[in-house]
Image (tube, rainbow, N blue to C red; front, side):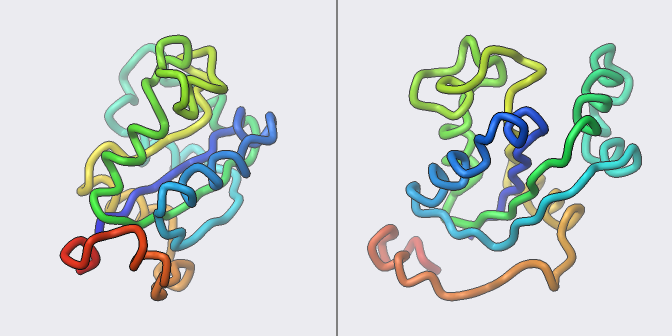
Length: 154
């Protein structure tokens, strides 16, 4: 099973969309492993967005991400990274498909509601960066019998 980090960004928190985000991921059949609210500091953001540090938009991104608490979530599922990115939609909310989180609720590139890991490798790394092992819960999700084929549950 893959893991992915989801960050409900300050705009999602301020607009009351965290529940909508959780609902869509649960309805897809994914398993929530951990969730917490946090204020992100400069060090956390610089680690998380390391590939963007030298880009012109980074100072604004950092300022925005520190403007309000965020909700951090760890999710798990069979090939979940690609599934979640489909649910989230394109980075620019104006161009994101209707039915996606960003397509339904976003109008911007910089205020795009949600972060989702972009690869299985980054999913593992990002979850480890934001969650201690004691904050993650491994449990049997009985719903998996109705979501996945037997070979997909292993």
